Structures are given as structure tokens and as C-alpha cells.
Length: 147
Image (tube, rainbow, N blue to C red; front, side, top):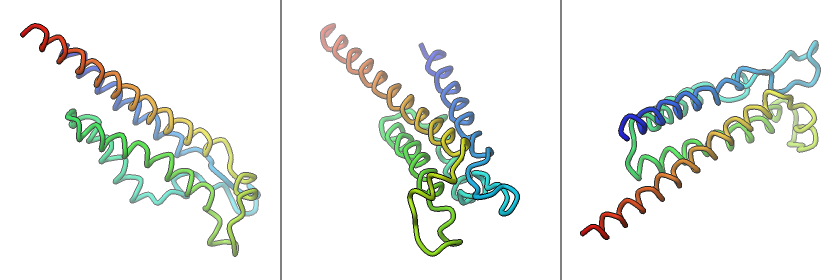
């Protein structure tokens, strides 16, 4: 049982690291030859991304109590929100105002893949947390009945 939990934890950490990979793909550009391709690493503040990734990875691997699970869930939820905000507003310093239609026209597959992977990771973690809570509840109920 303990080995299975440890194995699940490291599989989850590996999946988290894989969900970070689409940030290295092209995210958005107006014209490839004129302004160049903007990758996810260019759009998202790299210091914030590195700190967020390190703290999230640390929480996935080392925190197994209820507070740690909740903090990890919040950190995983921050990823797609940050990607969405950064991806749709990357050109605002270049232009005068925010235009949602223009934002959607210039984002490419790397942005959507990053959103998908980070959202799936968040969903898997929440699903796993609910399953673990249900198993703990059943275990406590069986222990009470045994007494």
C-alpha cells in the first residue's frame, strides 16, 4: 500500500513535469517573418514560472497531508489561469488597448496545448484527491465499525 502511494506520487510528479513542456512551443505571433515567433517562455515571466513550477513540484512530492493537497491544487489551478492571462494579453504593451478577437487570432497551437495540459493536470490531481478522500472516509468508517 505504501509503495503504491509513493509510486502514484512520483507518477503524478512526472506528469506535472510533462505538462510544463508545451510552454517551449510557439504561442503567438502576428507575422512570423516580421516580428518573429513568441514562445511560451517569452510570454510568461520566467522567474514567476520557475518559482511556481518548483513550489508545485515540491508540494506534489513532499506534502501528503490535507493542507498540502489543498495548496497543491491551488498551485496547479494557477497554471492555466496564468497561461490564459499571459497568452491573451502578450501584445498589450505593443498596442494601445486590449482586443479579445485579435488575441484569439494570433495565439497558436502551443498556447492551446499549454492550456490543455495544465488544465488536465489540475483535473487529474483534483480527481485523485477526491478518490483519496473517499478511500480515507471508507477506511475510518470500517475502523469505527470494527471497534
